[in-house]
Length: 453
Image 1 (cartoon, one colour):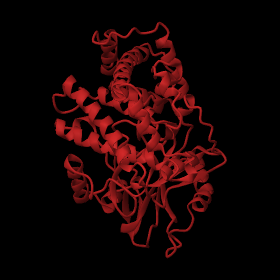
Image 2 (cartoon, one colour; image 1 turned 60 degrees about the vertical axis):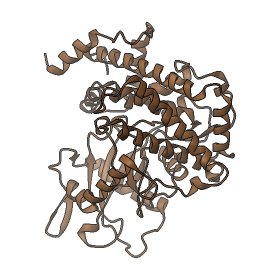
Image 3 (tube, helix red, strand yellow; image 1 turned 180 degrees about the horizontal axis):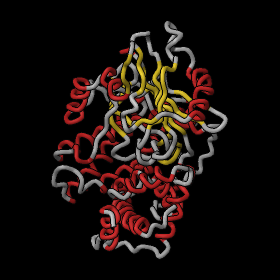
Image 4 (cartoon, one colour; image 1 turned 120 degrees about the vertical axis):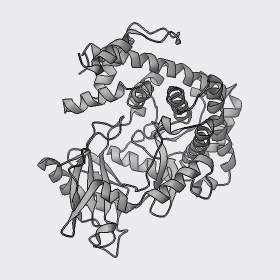
């Protein structure tokens, strides 16, 4: 018996007595059905089993990979949102959709490095508290993984800090449009987050990014296929992407004027084992010429297959997009102050793909990166600010957003009106975190039983 199977077998025997929630008799079958359905698009059984193995590493990893369960449980009332919240008008906005501690961090927009939401695969319109609750659930799930003694009292303090900072930031921008031009960059970050920024500036660059993924021979740059995270594309994949590349160029327009060869594709590769929630979707890297014929300013693009948002299970919104990649681009446009000009949509006869430039300064946080309460609280403060800015940008400030009202005004009034709003969000998150841990244990039982397709 392998060590992994033995570990799963032993851990599946015990579901922690700390959690008193009753497990519904059919919850295990429900999990099996929903997880199989959510991953049925993955045709490569080896990749699917690798994903399941990664999901079995921790409750937090399981949570990252199962946004579909979160929205299913919202739709069925397993997450018991108060009725007055559900009936409140005009509190919806563009959501991140999968907001947890690893979907926020640093990246750049051609002109500056900033701290912001970094993954919009699940984005769609819904009530703001879906994002705040999902984030706080992830906070409860990493309590044992941070690199300091994180007490239950400090956990409650951390959750309160996040929600208070979120509300205060909405109040700060209410009625003045400040959110339209405010980014969290070196001018307005501090503490642990500023320290990370300084480290990124010092230690990362486009040259180092290119060195990680490519090599040069005879004044030519190619992908380095000795890197285990890359493999050569199949002929059909290359034909599909190159054949439809003109749809991407048409979508982004001409921003590269001086060099007509800017988007000349020099090489392409399949990206392996990337992410967790999206693990299994097709993802490719393209090496393009960039601003000049010099090798050191080559640019890397990520070309990622777009799938339907799990938010659609729970929302009543009915904004339609012909392609899912268009929905993701709309989220970028609505939730950001400025959008990188490389951001665009590629459409083939089979699928749609969302394309972004790979930022040399993209960086996020693992739970173990938080060495002290101060580290984590700095991260939570800035994360709450980033979320509030993103939510408030996505309203009447941008007519294309389909939000015809002042979101921040409506949301702040709702939070003030609802009895114990922030306390209730924390209680809902804590209760659901306990459910996630139970689900995680049931998932490991299903794996041990080898009963997951």
